[in-house]
Amino acid sequence: MKHFNSLFLFVGVLGIMAACTGPGSGETTKNCELTGPEIQHMVIFNLPYPEGSWEARQFLEDGTRILTAIPVVQHFQVFRQVSGKNDYQYGFSMVFASQDDYDTYNNHPDHLAFVQERWTKEVTGFLEIDLKKY
Image 1 (cartoon, rainbow, N blue to C red):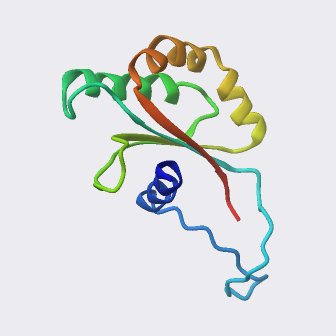
Image 2: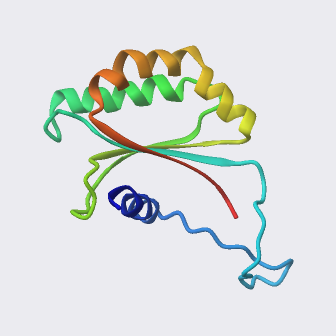
């Protein structure tokens, strides 16, 4: 249940609100289809370091520098958890224009190196979330 609650909390913290509108009406409809190829990729995670420590700041800064250098990454953001209802400390969020861009990111040598050299060695728990707009 922790991960289920964490998903909704994290989505709420980021202010991601999905709504579908009828053509030209501006009214919310109940039956909507996925629109556009854009993918919001988020990961919430813990580090073994005290909050605000040099090691935590360095991980977040390195992640930002490495991952934003990948050309298909858009709207990269770093978050710190502020709710006591969630066990995760930090979050990375980014947008991809298409499934192809998301696949390119996942297979990019810089992403793979970051995961192997930093993520798997330093992250103590995480939840990955990939969403498309409705």
